[in-house]
Image 1 (cartoon, rainbow, N blue to C red):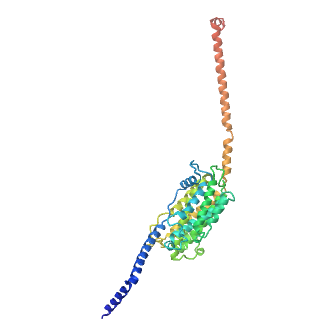
Image 2 (cartoon, rainbow, N blue to C red):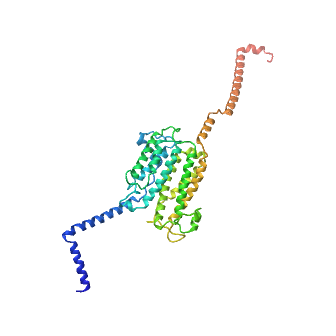
Image 3 (tube, rainbow, N blue to C red):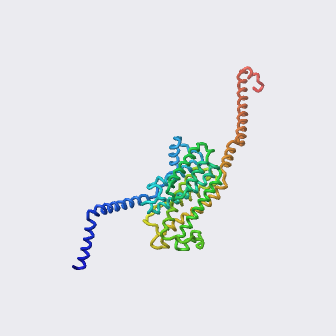
Length: 400
């Protein structure tokens, strides 16, 4: 028998052995189930990796107030209402999006994914920063805000009871309780001075600076880091190639959350931003963050250099984060010096103070009108006297 025939005979023998009734009814169904499972997890992984769309902060605020209190008045509520509702909506997004919270998953397909879990980490860190600052924005201690802050500080990878998702739900409930406390009176809610708001913007600046440095660590060129305002000698250790996309999506998630927070704060502190003449810089900061949310056309995050064939997504993202960092630092110093309550008090005093000049002018006009009325009255009396004298008196007049 030839060598080829011997190999074929051995293969046929192994096949017959596996197809015996003792084995055939086991491995074929198991193989089919394994293939179906892999296909399903692949489709789910692609679906779960899609980033949630942005939401309208004012619409979300109205829906939450109506769900909590049945409020259908359409009133804006006290200062801080929109910011609180926006933070609650962002926290709910972590658990309500397709696939739920994936960062602590221990089974496929969540355990295989890395882009969405790092996106969630960026959102969570920005939420923690705002929750910490909201205690100061509220003007002091508040049990509900302190509870929300503590619940969000849980480890992002906890999966045993109580899991991270359960902590996030508790934080959302605490924020809902604080939202119910905020009435329609503008005097309740966040403080009207800008120092706590400046502290939060300083946190934002520090967070964006950290992301910029980590993004720059993925750049192979030292000149690129220098253009971002980062000394190459102070740059962190080079990022491994398999970690480049992790940092990129963390920055993308952080910008997504910050974009909504800025819009919410803008609604609550519109008068303070106007007094600080900071509306232009605020809108520019939002525009820089909007650029970080543009669609990614490449199936993978590229790390090219120069004018090469491939793009460098980390460099593009770092350019937006460094611009946003500088704007946040400028706004922090500007709004911290403004106290909008003093501005409102000055406006009220100017409104109450009587317009002296206008009163004087009106008095002078009244005197002139009175003189004219007196003259007209004198002329009418003279005419009446002449009419009563008749023609006899007119003839006796020497002037005639």
